[in-house]
Amino acid sequence: MKLLVLRLSALGDVIHTIPAVMTLKPEADVTWVVEAPYRELVEIVAGVKTIPVRMKRWPNEPRAGIEAIRAMRGVDVAIDFQGLIKSAVLARLSGAKTRIGFDRHAIREKPALLFTNRKIHVDTTKHVVDQNLALADTKAVAAATALQNWDAFPQSVPGYEGSVVLLPGAGKANKLWPVERFRELAKRIGPKALAVWGPGERELAEQIGARIAPATNLRELAWILQKAELVIGGDTGPLHLADALGTKVVGLYGPTDPRRNGPYHQLEHCIDRFRTTKWMESISVEEVMNLLEKVAAE
Image (tube, rainbow, N blue to C red; front, side, top):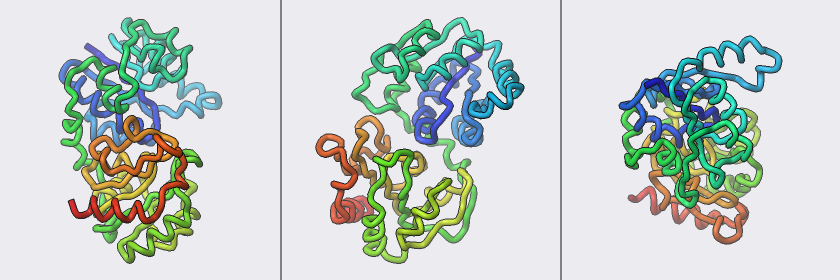
């Protein structure tokens, strides 16, 4: 059976989809449609073929879109783990006779329901990894099976081993912990503190006053996170990447629910404000230091 998986982005969401895809591999010839920056991650860790896309460029580069859609053709089943109109449309354009997606209670954009013909009910109170496993229609809930290939992914960046990594960035402003608190945290951690940054985040990282990591690609970032003593950050892709790599993490959660979006293997290592204030500002430096010391000692 030829199976098409659709989970285009972002980093954390792609990571949270890997366990479900790993359970599908024994049953099917899997190809994953994913945004180009995550192609290596999917190919190396999930061990499946990819169709890399850059959909935002398609209006100006229609030929690239046509070629990508042609590459999707000829599959028997498509599974849309994204639940957006764009991913559901791609599943329909693949020509797959069976198109699996979330039902109306879990899907992110309701019009996407028009393009699936097998709608799966999942428990939305559970972690997104478990929701994806349910969508894949598998009882293999041991997501640790996806860990076996992670060691092949990181790419060496010597000189940053043993750091306590601070992740000041996030995809949305309300997920940011105040930079002045990261600054105070870095002072208390001392020389081991290392601020890691992504596109557009260098200035933010510099404000922390700690050592600054170099610019990295995704595989180099993975190496720094894998070799870290501990990683601290909000609900952001690099935190989930560190967790997947087996590194100890401390998650800072305000507007999002760690029970659903937390570091899957370390949900107990989160400071949770979702059930109270939902504000990152209500997380104190003292709380983070206390949890950091507890996690580091485990």
